[in-house]
Length: 95
Image 1 (cartoon, helix red, strand yellow):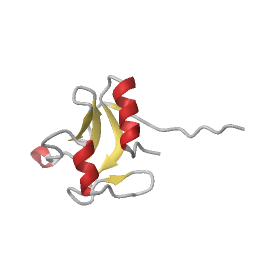
Image 2 (tube, one colour; image 1 turned 135 degrees about the vertical axis):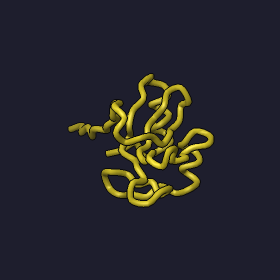
Image 3 (cartoon, helix red, strand yellow; image 1 turned 180 degrees about the vertical axis):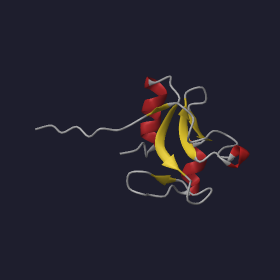
Image 4 (cartoon, one colour; image 1 turned 60 degrees about the vertical axis):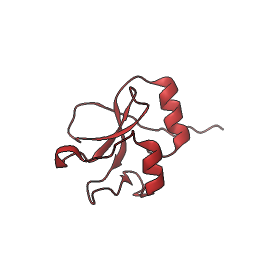
């Protein structure tokens, strides 16, 4: 699963200082961000909340992957081939 909710981004803000991809991109259609796991499209108002000011901007026409940036406590669109970490979510079951 991907980091889909503002609450989860808040957890990142408090617990990590790394730049990381989060499983979200606009590769198929510029400006239409889609989650990798279930192909859910992010609404425009959510993009404004999650991305830092002025982003996403598709710099150099090749920024298609969303990454978390701890410096800004927000998302930025970045080159998908940048060598940075990924954040993954694991389901935990309690019996």
